[in-house]
Image (cartoon, rainbow, N blue to C red; front, side, top):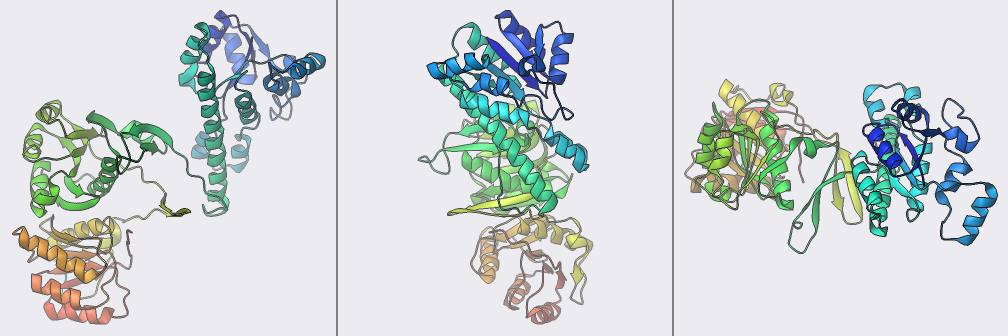
Length: 510
């Protein structure tokens, strides 16, 4: 039996080769892999002894040869194939271990197009595809984590059809994601990221028990190992809906840097938010906004959950808490509650992947766009349109309201007072309805919105929303501006003594 080993990532390859050698396999190799195996005392045949042709064109051609691909592709159970292989002097290659040139690492390291081109693997993917096509006769290994599994299977004669098939599927996933990465890079470099085809690839992290509903299947996939590095399930398993709610809460809570932000979300919408001197105070104030909706909700904590905070949170039923991290005695507080789920990122503060692009499925396809970014300077650089300027605290409240509004379903209006959200109306067909719904809810909760700051993620088309805000006691408003009736809105603000700021940036979230 013969194995061809040709890897870019050489971690574990020496032990794998030694394992094959111990089982009686003959080893063939190329370039740097050949050198590393030889240096470690492994008896290895250099590829040009097989191809009867030297590596050429600076290594661009070395395995693209019929003695390689013939040895991989001929069917062992086909008499005609076997006879032709014998006639041509083609010997079988029964295992191929390949991982590809480091294209990703290269584009992260340099913008030199010549170097990038040289790090596009040709022979590697070709061998992977050939081996995967003939998987019943050839074991194809593309993942360093599979080395021990393959050796165990060979040693115990358990390299079954199903085992080989699984390696085949993984091999095609490997080459598909590699080609997608190259195509997306080229389109990003030359077509502003919008080519004739858009490839979205992700690596499976785990299967969820079901999807949005019990009759649906679901799973979490990640870009760039983000969840593998920044998501630990400390208690309970994350469901499909948990993950989408966590995403909404995390985006809001993490958008204020190192501040002690706490966001409470229910069904993807914020129902509480605050920034205070401590995380305990922040959670306490956030909960006041809508404690009824918070029941069974998701809480994102931009920091480390202490025992004191855990005891406060444990007073009501929360389904999920996502935090930078948890102290050990904080986790103990929640142990007796069976239904609560605790997830940590393993950091002192929450972090985002900050994906550069965003997409949404629609029937028959998907729409794709640059990711929206609510920049920190949008409030700082907003244009004062009214006679009255906001106070420093009102400016802080405007910043909070603006960011929360931009990360909440449109149409949306957010009211913030003393760095805590006191009312929110979201997902409404009318901006007036959103404002009125928020105020009605605040009244039901016994919250005083007088003196608050208000944000709308898109412009107010009429002055009626300003009049309603004034009646509620709002003192400062921030919105994009851009309505044909902006002058009426500005006039209304001056009539009521309200500070009005235009950001010139809209943040729809549909």
